[in-house]
Image 1 (cartoon, one colour):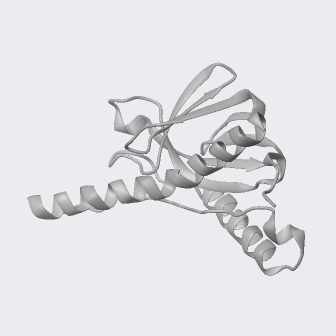
Image 2 (image 1 turned 90 degrees about the vertical axis):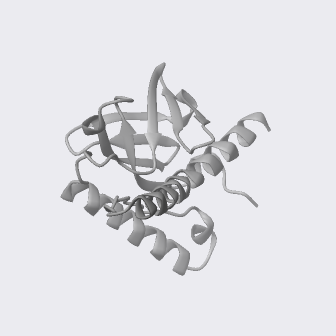
Image 3 (image 1 turned 30 degrees about the vertical axis):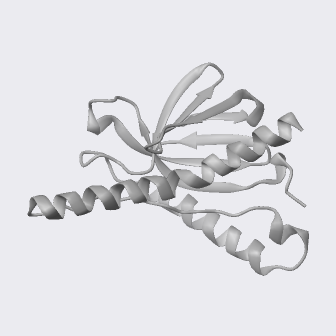
Length: 165
């Protein structure tokens, strides 16, 4: 039996693209779905904390997630720009706590084990010395972006099916 949308629990580290052209404005965020609420926070602020009914999501072929939250639009990507700041200690601690909680749930017997999973994906970009190395990094970056966003595509798809059903 599938979990109801309000029992799904998922947390990941992704990047909020605040500007399509300024890499410094692509900032690390923790995106968390818990108890029927979606939360997103940066190192310095809670961006939103809303019931999932106030959220819609669309996805590009290149794995950008476009969230609309209470009428406001957010572009979320799986990796930061080369100029993006790092995840803060507080964000990393939240991701680690979510990972530990998911591991505990999976290891415990009973229905709680099926309540949800957590990913702690913190992307990084390494530099390359040659054009071929750069191409390899671009392919690896696309794979990382897709891997970071894919669970959210599944979660929002499940929530849409549950709302329609």
